[in-house]
Length: 175
Length: 150
Image: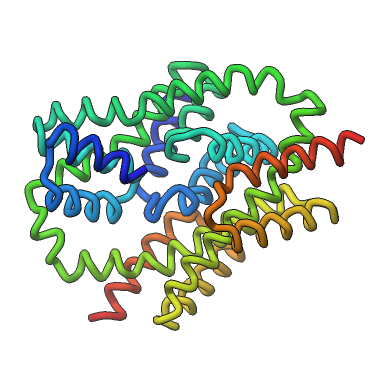
């Protein structure tokens, strides 16, 4: 039963995650935290951080992580496969009708309409993570500093700021 | 990541021509799912049919899968340690900052279409207010796209 739930949850994530990993976060959170309670709020935050720190798509990372936490290696296999299935299915389906897909007006307008949806989704991801993880003035200050740094130093790998921010937390909260 | 895929597929292995790669990429980006996985599906299909798709997806997902299994098996044992918790407490504001940066960037690119921004705001607030499943944002956004441009 748990395998079926994992399968369906990540099948939904795979089918509706348009616009990249950050836009997929609210979908993942809804399934994994709100609906099935597989991860706590804290664990979800940790998963997002780990996904940023490791290579690979957030969808795969969260499927593997959640599946493993809930039932072990077989769980991560089922969840990861479920996340990839929509890609396999849709590419195979569209492959033969590629020019139709690219020229069909309704399809293209639908895809164009996803731009505001993706902005809203990433906004929800930011709001929800801030609500869960920013609880004191130090965190607000740290977030503001990182935002300014990331925004004006686009050439520096954001992972560096992420690590430094973690170290700052280690020092501040540890003392 | 994309230059990496391109070098392997177009320049080294010559599975696809540059044009085919660009076409595949635009399809991969417009379909749901991870872009790397979608690109792998497309390239595999082009080279060796359905079997090619399956092998490519396996190749594209296996490294992340193994890395996360490895990380998770350690992490779930040690996550309760105070030092680990403090590190993640510090990292979270940075994650939020990165995501807000992404919203600002994408929002700016949408500035040429005020309708987009207004719809984005409405979708944002109704989802939070009514606690909707985010898949509805995708469906409503797409349908509004079709209706607005009829």
